Image (cartoon, rainbow, N blue to C red; front, side, top):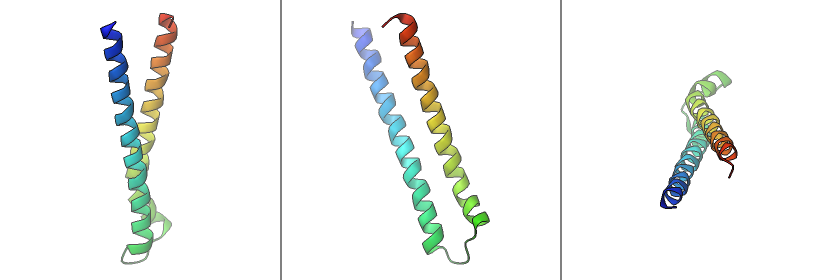
Length: 83
């Protein structure tokens, strides 16, 4: 009984951490775009904007893919165990 509660608590903590990381990366990408478009000294074109935003988008995509695979694994495990 206590073990199941601990697993649920751990699941909630991991879920909060994932959501925070995804939100941080999303707001970071938006801030980089706004900074590059409005406050960058010099000319901003699509190529330079792409070079600036590329690391943020890649990390955001990897976090979302990893979270979805983690949720899918958890749901399949719960289904297999018969919950």
